[in-house]
Length: 100
Image (cartoon, rainbow, N blue to C red; front, top):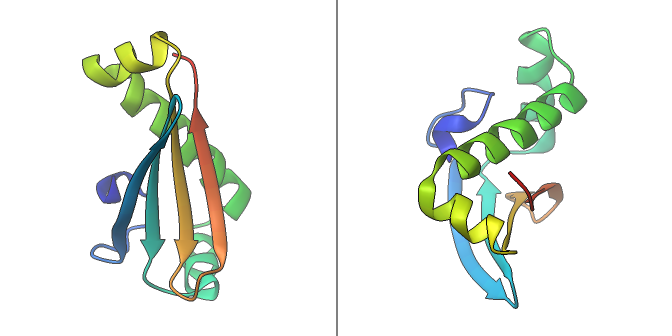
């Protein structure tokens, strides 16, 4: 998943937990830097944070739907959720994939 982040800050993401609740599979990730660092990098790359978030959503769906097991889970009614937060606990982004 870290390799799919559009902002190339390698080694700056940590998988912190995976949980399931009913038909949800939730992956929690922590970005090991502050919001200002992310925003600065995105702006320096000539993009907006909203555009980056949208692209991350599309990439997550594409990745889940191209994986056979993940696609089967979703097609049977499963929902995959990715929850990103910053190191200090500030929420960044929740991505939900519920259809392919």
